[in-house]
Length: 105
Image (cartoon, rainbow, N blue to C red; front, side, top):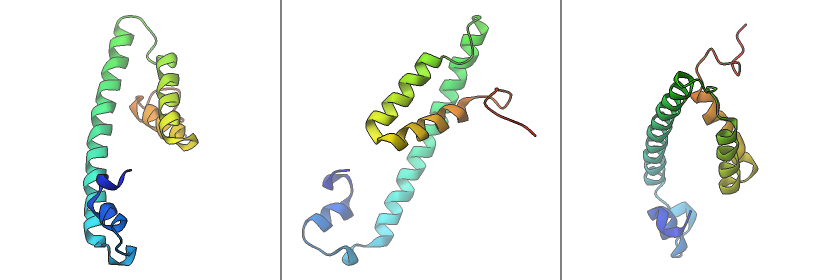
């Protein structure tokens, strides 16, 4: 994140102490970003499920492992080792409950 990404960060870069930061504004910005992230994740899940249905209807496997590997690599390159965990969870969320990746008791 750069100093221009968030007003509070830019204020701190200008010499004010972190204690002077208006935490309610920071928390409001985090909540706004969380809403954007959730919206983007829901759109991604819908598109991934559409892609999986389309593959199955055409006779291909539901999961494109090469594509999933590319997603994991992209997240890891951008976010570091923990980025791969985020990618794996997004991929898991997109799979239907009957997939072999879900274990039921």
